[in-house]
Length: 188
Image 1 (spheres, rainbow, N blue to C red):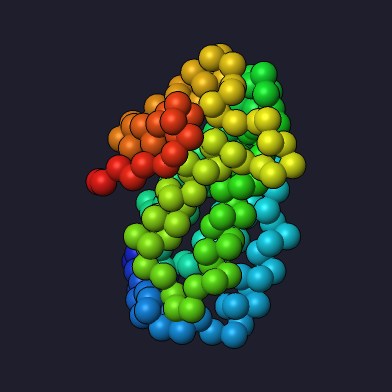
Image 2 (image 1 turned 135 degrees about the vertical axis):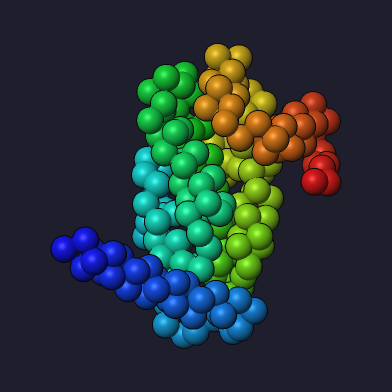
C-alpha cells in the first residue's frame, strides 16, 4: 500500500512539474487566442467585495508559483482587506482600492502581447498601488488614502505588516504624492 501511495504521489508530482514546465515555456511567446479570450472574460471577476479575480488570473498565468505576486501578495492582501473591511471607517476606499488594483492588473493583461514573466506581473501589481491608493476611483474623487482618518491609515499599515519592505517601498511614494501631489519612483 505504501509503495502504491509513493508511486501515485511521484506520478502526480511529475505530471504537475511537466505541466509547469510546459506553461513556463510560454513566457515571451505571443499570448494565444484562447488565453486572450480567457483574459477578456476575467473582467467579470473584478469586484469591490471579492478576491476571486486573482484566482482567475493565476489560472491563466499558472506558470507563476503560489509564492509569486498573484497569490502570495495580490490575493493574500485582497483577502486581508476583505476580512477587515468592517473595521474601516471609510469602507468605500477599501472597495474602490480593491477594484482599482484588480482593474489595473486586468488592463495590463489585456494589453500584453506576450506571456509576461512572473516578475513583470509583480511589477504590474506593485506599480498600480500608488494610484489605486491615492485616487482609487473616478466616481469618488474625494476618497483617497491621503484623506483617510488616522484610524484607517493605521489599519492599512497593520494589515500590511507582513509585507514590511513592500509596504515601505510603496508607502513612501504614496505619502509623497499625498503631500506634494506628484509621483516619485523608489528603486528596489
